[in-house]
Amino acid sequence: MEKQSHIFLNALMQGLTADQALQRASLKDKQPLSMGEMIHAISHDFDMQMLSTLQSDPMPEKVRERIAKAVFVRLHVMEPFKQAIGILMRQGLWPHYGASMVHTAWQTADTIWYWAGDEATDFNHYTKRTLLLGVMVPSMVTWLQDDTENLHKTKATIEKTLSRVMQIPKLKEKALTCLRSTPFVGRFFK
Figure 1 (tube, rainbow, N blue to C red):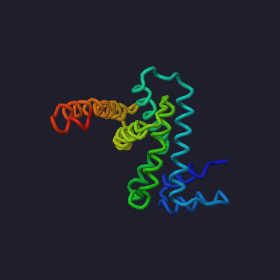
Figure 2: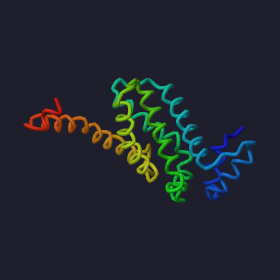
Figure 3: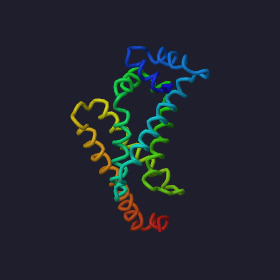
Figure 4: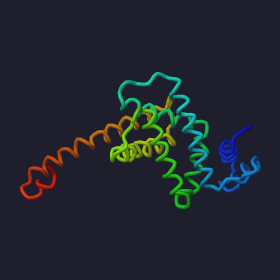
């Protein structure tokens, strides 16, 4: 049986509005989903497809390479529904369902980090996921417009934003070193 999320996305590609597509997808199930629930279902389905694909391939040794691969695979599994996802973005779901979209993006970042082997439970847990969102969002924007073979522009954006994000810990350490060397303020950063 076809999943509600696929019915919804296919209906969007057939020209239905988001509300009409939700109504069509709801006809297939006795428990219709709200738009927020549909957004969560779509994201969860893509996360599971991503994990399935990632688990069938050898895991890269370096964490940075794992993260880049996972972000790319997540976008790649969404490729058959790129048009529908673009339609959703253009139909202005962001203002009304922004919280659902942010929550699902966080869940995807969390899924990627767990797959990559992250076991942090301290502040780093949140920092890593927040920084990954800074890679995922520009990568998705590029992906939506990428018509190159093998998504070369998307891959380049993932690498470029990942490189920028990797500079943040170095900048943080430089700032702390500077603060520590300041006579009065330095006492608070030892």
